[in-house]
Amino acid sequence: MCLFWAALRHLHSGEVVSDRAACRSAFLFSSSAAVATTASPYRVPETVNGERARRYCLPMAAGFRLRVNGVERRIAAPAARSLLSVLRDELDLTGSKYGCGQAACGACTVLLDREAVRSCITKLGTVGERKVTTIEGLETAGALHPLQQAFLDHGAMQCGYCTSGMIMAGVGLLAENPDPSEAEVREGLEGNVCRCGTYPRIIAAVRQAAAALRGQTR
Ligand code: FES
Ligand code: FES
Figure (cartoon, rainbow, N blue to C red):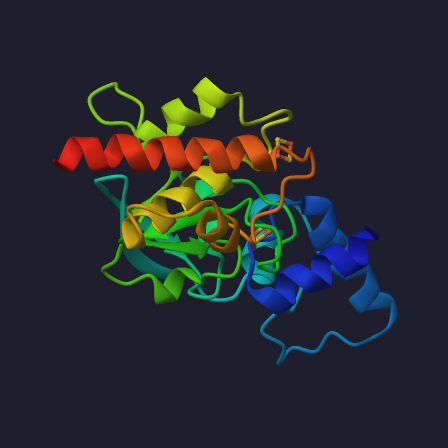
């Protein structure tokens, strides 16, 4: 992607401009087109480097408290920043993946309380008191979640890029429906894309985990 468009997209969405080159590109564009004014919230300084450029390129950061995988975390970031970006870039929880960035692939799926959401379009400022669970927080006392184990048992991944999102979506589905039919699993995971085409194994894994979880609660 052209650096200018990368910078413009970040500025528009309130995402962190983590790429210094993208910030520089915005500066170069605004200078040459003479569109930067002193009134702009994104005014770029004459000298662009390091933190100084970062400060000028970002919308105002605010303080947020997030409960992530059972641990309270404090985040200073703009409210409009995506939850996915905070998880990956601030908290080093890189299990959630960036695929499409527009809620169309499911690679970034995490749980807010028991609901599966697309973290790429979930704004930090909207999370509130809800508990965030990522793939890193699914195991308990060193034991894999039954759905993680079922994915291993069925070899339900090839490249693995979709896997954490699939598992989190599956956990969300099983929280709503503890005994889904094959058709219900298909429907429940419809928005999660696996480019390697491991769908039959994923469905088998979800149904195995459903049986295991029902056994645990008897
Ligand atoms: S990256 Fe969030 S749905 Fe694709
Ligand atoms: S295992 Fe490769 S995208 Fe699903």
